[in-house]
Amino acid sequence: MSSPEIASLSWGHMKVKGCSTSYKDCKVWPGGSRAWDWRETGTSHYPGVQPADLEDVLRTGVQTLVIGRGMNEALQVPPTTLDYVNKQGVDVRVFQTEQAVKEYNALVEQGAKVGGVFHSTC
Image (cartoon, rainbow, N blue to C red; front, side, top):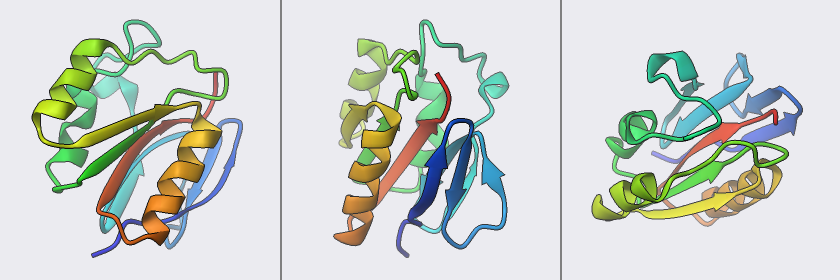
């Protein structure tokens, strides 16, 4: 099963190929996507992405995880979260969201088992 391509990105709006829903923030993995609702884990810009935000994507067996920190990189990714992902044996890559989408889509095109979490505003 392949990871879905991110079809479009603009401020506050993301479309995933093959999905009729648009997202503000989203999670993608081989075979699926869903909204990334920060309220589920109490996430905020600071301290930022928590391991709990990533668990469902990591459980899909991805080999690479791409994190988009927002258009202005306001969303933090603490070292403890990076350590958590690395300890799962997963390569983690963190970028400004436009760059993150480019990286993610390039990995999808290569057939990589890749997942991602993307913040589409600040």
